[in-house]
Length: 399
Ligand SMILES: [Zn+2]
Image 1 (spheres, helix red, strand yellow):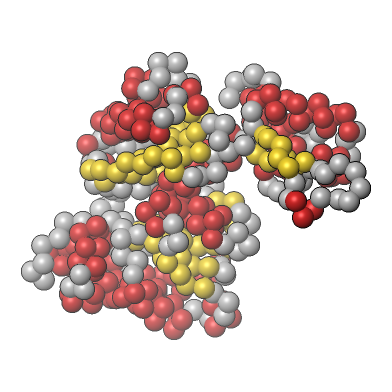
Image 2: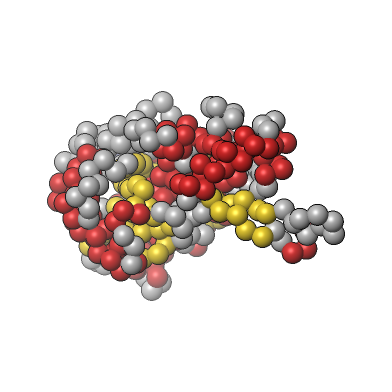
């Protein structure tokens, strides 16, 4: 990282590390004129603005310092959060505020071509609804219910996304964007990540910014986990970290999982598994969201099964929590409610060492159904405005 570049100053301003010209000079050691020159680049790009300081801070002598801040309204991000049978899409400003949103039925098993083309149509409609020009879109972020290679943006061996394995998602999304939104948008940046990762990223940043080890478990149709360490998503060496739904339990050898193995956690404790168990108990249910509906009306079999599922997940989490020692364990997704949490707590506290859970908060989602979208937007913004990328973009180099 070039410590003297405009991108670096932007990074200091965005993170609240420096909010005045004087602070930038002090932190970087640059001269007043060099700081001024770098800031001019950022002003010209429309990325920062200067506002009057807090009236209470005005000095009695001399001019009041003007506060520098990132201008979150100078561009927008398009994001989509794909579930197996349903999707949510939105246009957001760069601070993650939703400007327009749409959700509807979208079957992931129709395959990436069909799904991404439909998203292109949704994005065009959303920009229209928000009154935002296509030219203001700086990037697209997608949240998917499967493992993602963070470098290529490809989904890798996803158990519940038939037809998506190694499919060039970013390229196809760019095509759909160019076809439905803006013919000149063929090179728009498209970033893709796993839903649990992005939800964890959003929830940690918004609700628990001081938590240095944050763990989120998403239990909807499948089961996944997202880990944020020191404010950064932890993906492992190739994006496979956190796929806890396919940890094999020793005492369910006959439960067939979507991944082809037997006895996986997801085969007995996911929304899909509970839908099957509820159907067998005489309550026809087809998906994780169907189970959520039954839980919402207090259906007794659903409540009992959710608590049992929570116990199974809690047993696996005892190991996970012992390894990571998180400050927060957040339970999110269709099954996240009191019965499931009760089951998790029961086994977790019974099986994990007291020392690893002494300061652990077990909580439910704060951002709810929007967590994936907000996480996807944050991923795009953090990538596009990182110091090196910001410098490349300011210098008109390839983004
Ligand atoms: Zn499995």
